[in-house]
Amino acid sequence: MDATSFSGVLPQMKLSHSDHKLSIGRSCSSSRSLGFDSCHSSKRLRLPKQLTVSCSTPSDKGDMFGVSHSCKKSPVGETYCPAGVYTYAGTVEPHSHTAEEKVGVLLLNLGGPETLHDVQPFLFNLFADPDIIRLPRLFQFLQQPLAKLISVLRAPKSKEGYAAIGGGSPLRKITDEQANELKKALKSKDLPVNVYVGMRYWYPFTEEAVQQIKKDRITRLVVLPLYPQFSISTTGSSIRVLQDIFRKDAYLSRMPVSIINSWYQREGYIKSMADLISKELEIFSEPEQVMIFFSAHGVPESYVKDAGDPYKDQMEECIFLIMKELKSRGINNEHTLAYQSRVGPVQWLKPYTDEVLVELGQKGVKSLLAVPVSFVSEHIETLEEIDMEYKELALESGIENWGRVPALGCTPSFIMDLADAVIEAAPLATPISTPRTISEEVDHDPARYVIKLFFGSFLAFILFFSPKMIMAFRNHLI
Image (cartoon, rainbow, N blue to C red; front, side):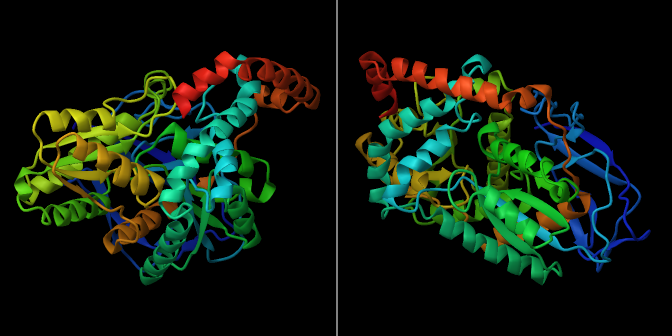
């Protein structure tokens, strides 16, 4: 795939020492075998007067920040690169008076209920996110009542799913393990860091992680969402929360930050995925006859068409790069991509995983290897949805031999590549400092909030608890 490229220049860091040193040195040179940059180690990196950032993307659509994917600047001074580092090119102020930086890494993930009792409040947090359910501005006061309704209706079925995988999500445990392994990997590369975990919808929440970062007096932060591809509903939502927290705090708003908003193009990731796929193929009696079935988490179609979410383009390029790597190893299996986990009556990205499995069975496919390409950790969508629901559907549809590639987890090559990504991103950090918009100030007006809450709750009660409305939601959500 052809890609457009961009170069932007970050402003000079105003530090208390005129020749400030950062003990994480990397000297970067371009490597285009898979469309990404590689870096070579050096003992120590001196921050130059100007730093140049380069990135590439297969799309020219707009994104949630109002910035094109050719990496132009938004009105608030943000620079967005869909397949690279997301930095803030605003005014840079002095932050630390120490000669050496204290570097932190913040891993972002979705989060998941750890017990069955946690399921309903977790679902409420999920559906209360305006990046998950995008209501028109006029009806945004219905966000929480709607989230309450959906979470209550959906909780019983979700509890069954979590009960089937042991009574809770293993996501927190796995993410903590990834954080520990990443810390070790960075230490082995001469970059001692503190690694933090922030979940969007359950404990430990992003807000808790940020408060610990502040308490530890971190002076430079690399934010690493554990989603290979960028989407409004995943990385975008977490970034929005971070922006809100940082700009309200004097210390945090001056902290240099780099956000690695997507990394699906990285060589280490691509090769790690290819390693897992090739290993699982060897289990089949006839590996060359196996259909490689990539199943990605879906998003509403409107996110891509109306909001400019780059997720679909990035996912398709990701599959292209993985298959290119497999073909270089002599693996030429057929493959396909489908999207899972749709919710509600709206159109989601197609084709749908369940429908494609049935079609493949009808076409005579006998061996299939499922690859959960959106996920780097095992959780309910891999352990229950793919391993149980989709496997059963595939076997019922005529597919005789089923296999599934495990999530990357703590695969050493994957962790080492994440460590390289952190090292490459750290010198590019600049402060997050974006002023509130007029609309946000209006939304924080107490009187308006009370009025919206009162009339919103009253209207929600009338609308949502009518028999017809409940039946409609039950048909689509349960």
